[in-house]
Image (cartoon, rainbow, N blue to C red; front, side, top):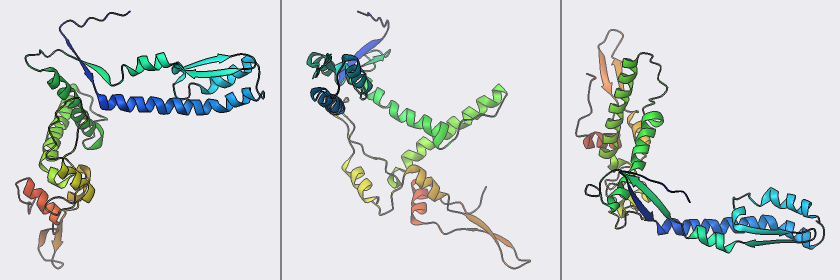
Length: 267
């Protein structure tokens, strides 16, 4: 038996009943699928179309672990028979651990109770989203073509500041996107997150409460990019007048949420 020691750390054991049910259902489906794959081999042996322990074993070996369920099956092979049954004790032992996971943290219990540890762990999904936005989706941190250390650091700093700006934009422009503005406070931190009624209604109708169409954050930025400024010259020798395209209602609303006016000229 392996013994693990985590000095200075706390271990928080969690059990998610929803995840447990999901894994139990998935295991049952995969076992049934594996048995369906093996059924023709069993039928062939019973009908004496397939014989010989070596030949039967080769047939079974090719397919028994197709869904990684061989560990839960007991196989008995002779030259003329093939019996496949479920290993109920093995299945029960694995099922007893369904939905259980352990979190490690160095934060003291006085600063963060067990429920807070779970909530903080789940919030890492937002951090991963922000890093994905930083590296790929929006800001393209990589690849970096700088060679000098100071320039690399400056490039990363600019991207981090842009990521911070993106975080604020996501929050401020939430009424025009599918973002849940008022997510329900979970009574159980282990339970899956749920959406508010308003967010569900917004997602199904694709219309915000103020009647504006709802877009993804990326889609909203693309729509804002269509707001153009053109230099129009009146006559061959006339003055050049910077002219702003007529904003759409969504574009006007976006600037209202940002608490600023649409600039008539670039500074």
